[in-house]
Length: 101
Image (cartoon, rainbow, N blue to C red):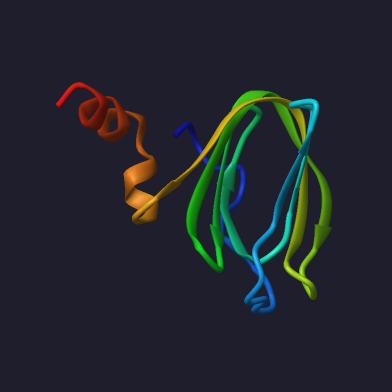
């Protein structure tokens, strides 16, 4: 992942429910977000109540942020979203290494 735009992760109130709603690959609404570890215009790394999630795309921006409810909206062209076992699994070298094993 490229340099983080956040010096410290944003931590939210605990929400045990995790929902993902994507609309036309342009809008992603998430609940159950515990923290945003890092983000830039091509990748978000978030911890959810169901594990670490990576959202990748182009021109990604943070649309809505509700830290009390653990709700996040991401706008832009969404190419992929996936869960990883830990946030260190988000490093591109590690992902590429896993793909070619």
